[in-house]
Length: 635
Ligand code: IVH
Image (tube, rainbow, N blue to C red; front, side, top):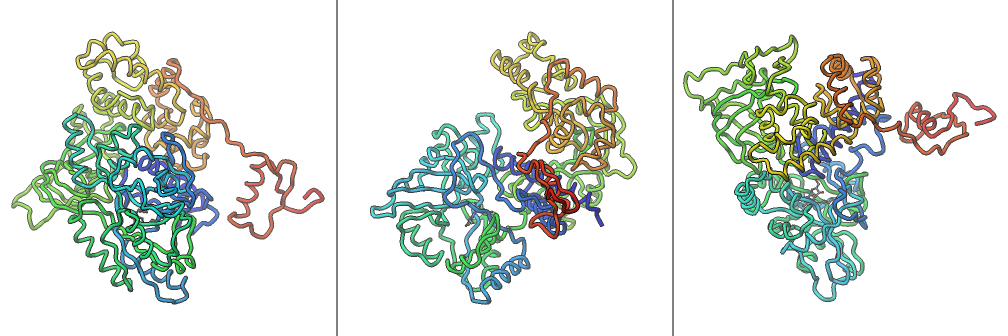
């Protein structure tokens, strides 16, 4: 049984992780985990909050629509919020939803509409007087981004409605990139020698977030419309089916695979049929959406804070394919961790070609018993990180040898060590070039010091040229500028840009710096948590392990790791070096709420909606009030 403190720490951690993944997915179009893994985090947080209601914060990602309105485009406040959908992962969960609908309708029969769940981006199109005047992304559900100029370039989107159309029509749907367009785009990217897109969804998102609409125009985006937003002066519509038909009559692209069905068994058959045939489509889907058809029934069912109760997304399970395992190699990470990974005969799975997949650690390889030469099952959970599920034993060639973990580091040849009780094997050589490379790359990456131009290849070139050995050396690069200019393939402009980016990085927030320092267990979120708690690097330099463990959201393992890192003289020397280079060591000041309850004395008795008693007392004190245990004249 987890203690309350553990649960609180875990909830804080999960909330931070979910927000970080939201940011990568929605703002950077560069997700780090699969949809399935993301959903697991959200579900874990939801069940923690359910078991400990006082841990639920009003802004918890379990209650809010995921997503961000970025700063690149003008903000648009949606006339009606753009909601997200709850998920069902299997038939049992689908039935669970059916029962809730049934209860909500007091047993009255419902007709369901089943649609494909298009893997793209939600979009709102607003027409006034029959003319398209605004297109906005979902953003956080309340405020989205104005992408009108870009949407104007999409042929499938009507720019004018037939004469006599209502004064205001807002239509919602999914902008997507057809698979053929995605493949053609990636071929062009490859020919230009620039980074390929991961999948059609990310390329659609990236294409819409262009400042230059000509780039969007070249990306062949399309759209399916599936929902009405605000309508002024439209016809009386009583069902979803009728509104879809009306949309089609106005010239909106409506998906042809929409079906009205009368039982959940039929619904399940629909989802199952599309699970088998998803690749027959010329666009990607990641499931099906089931909606109650009758609009009066929808009204009865209503919404939760983030999703309608009258609809559910049935998400497809992760996709699987088989391919040949060519080799198992080991990479050395920035903290010395040796991670085995599979080198695969390239295979197209989950919307992109996979040639490598992580095998996590020694135990995982043994457990899965995959051997070079095996035919293996590869899974793309959601769309991002490929995984080797296991070997197809019936296809294993006779006499295939079991794979053994290397005993020495592939980069520095020092003996690898697996500490007792741990699952990871490590290279402990502080001077290992593979570690140095990975540490500097991480230091310069987005989320850490964000040094544009200091990518994987450049760092490799600098290390080889003897210009760089460790993180501190990054700030010597501007001094070694003459030698940078000597390097082949490094023009004057790149040198100037890099020097500018390095100088600019000195002002990054303390949380980014802490994340960039490669302290084990300190991710981007934890970096911010620690920066917020200690306000200044000096506070952290003086902190004991107990001080660090006392921070809300920091567990014992993390505190021990941070304390151990700061105890190493070389690391302290690095901090002093960075101080001398003028890096920002200042963290955020302690947050203060408006002191709206100053001078008041409020006693908490009974229950306060949404708070535990301690929580309510703390909230009063944070706002400047007093909360004594009993009533007095001042209360
Ligand atoms: S209905 C109020 N229908 O899935 C809910 N959404 O995971 C309106 N999506 O935000 C959404 N295909 O971007 C609906 N046929 C479909 C959809 C669909 C894809 C997306 C949409 C939504 C997300 C939720």
